[in-house]
Length: 443
Ligand code: SAH
Ligand code: SF4
Ligand code: F3S
Image (cartoon, rainbow, N blue to C red):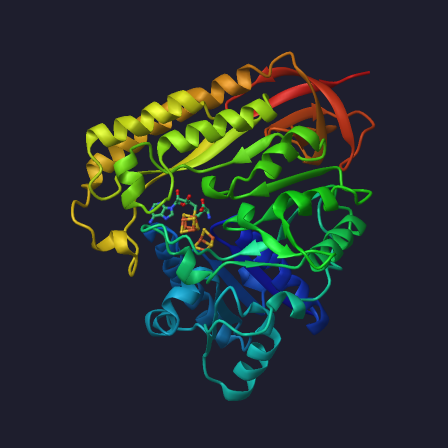
């Protein structure tokens, strides 16, 4: 047996892609290594979204170079591969900057990994593969046979045509593409056979999904969800990430009507100021977003809302930032992610005037995160005493304790008694900590 170590950075889609790479390598005789030290193949599946994310990769590659050198002396040099969005964005630059890298390939070419490995072995030279191929990589990926946990990701849509001025995704993931329903259904059924109970449908713009349906028509995400929720064994469905512009009526209605669709929605607005939203090319105003939230809450009053925010976009004034705080106060998030604007090479915003100083960004981020933290705490506190179904996912800290997820994606610690991972249990929430809840099972 050969051993592979895959490290994922960035978004959930990279986690999914890493698993699929793992699946691809099984027929080549690879099994999971316990770490880079005992791996014959090391893959870094990278993220380019912010500068820090990309820099992490180079620092990791520096460490791996030393590992490779010392293991070379023992005649067992591992193959080092850089996959994902940094690979797509930087290509050959990676082998120039980081010695010891053998393979560089982007998110749209990882299905070619077996050929790339072969070519590397035959030529003895680094192999770089960053074109956007004509074939559909999903047609070339192995059927999922490897055991999964109770929850799994499933990519249904990839790429983005929105071109927000700060964002690299349209360049690294390419243009928007929806997988056909039949292909997705087959993968969902295979996941269920492998033990999965909850599937999160993934896309950079997942609610822009418009795939070939089973009846020759184009299906929306809502229709896909309705279809998948009929599969026996799927208990829960989620989807992420959505764009406010693509939040259609049928998807909102699905939140009201489909009990398998969980009451949680990640719907980034990025900023509260309309002037900044325009500069970001988001295609919505804060008022549109608030109206949308009202309609979603009408359909599903208990829905937990999440979002992404960027502070310190070029030209952002204190008044603009105040508008971000104001929208957060108005929406009330169950949890959200916030970032300092990071200029990305090649994106329009990186060349805009009015770049905001680092200390101003840090100050705004701290204030925003404080507010979001208060809201998250309040959301969790409000769950105390409530009854809810929990899907048990993994072992907890103590013997007999398991960790599950609430419908609202909170981690819940439970003394599970005779219940096992994969069970759905009804609990009452007893206590609320900073990042998790604890609960007891109904007798
Ligand atoms: N496809 C998703 C997420 C894209 S990346 C969407 O459209 O919402 C995840 C988040 O990273 C974004 O929502 C944004 O908040 C943040 N982000 C993207 N580019 C960034 C940049 N240049 N600087 C800081 N944050 C950024
Ligand atoms: Fe990036 Fe905007 Fe596309 Fe999201 S919608 S992936 S933020 S360009
Ligand atoms: Fe990062 Fe690429 Fe995802 S840039 S956030 S890994 S789409």
